[in-house]
Image (cartoon, rainbow, N blue to C red; front, side, top):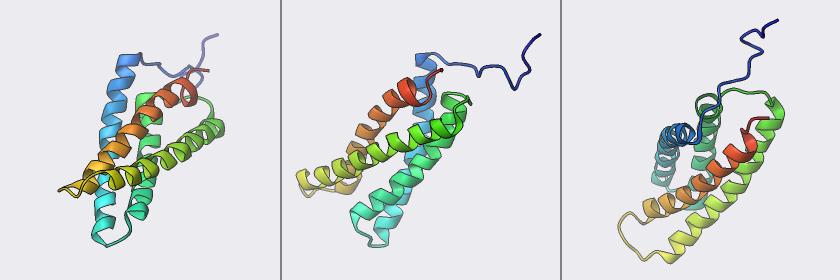
Length: 140
C-alpha cells in the first residue's frame, strides 16, 4: 500500500538549497522589519520600541515563509511553533540588545540607526539559521 500525498514526507532540501531559500526569505523578512523600524522611528517612538515591533513583524513573516518555502511543511505543529517562538524570543533579546549596544558604541554618523539595525539583524539571522535548521525544522 502506498502513502497518499498527505502522508508522504515533505521534500527535504540540501544545505545549499536551504541557505539560498533562507537568504531569499530573510531578504523579504528584513525588508518588512527594516521598513517598519524606520516607519516607527519616523513617528518619534523610542528606538527600542521601534526595534521590538519591527522584529516581531519580520519574525512573523520569516516563520510562515521559512516553514513553507525553506524547510518545507512538516509534522510537528504546536511543538515546532513552540520551538520557533522560543528561538525567536531568544534572538529578539539578542537583536534588541545588540541594536542598543551598537547605538551606544557607534559614533554620531549618518545612518547610525540603520547601521545598528544591520548589525543586530545580522547577528540574529546567523543564530536563527543554525537553530532553525538543526533544531526547529530538522527532519524528525
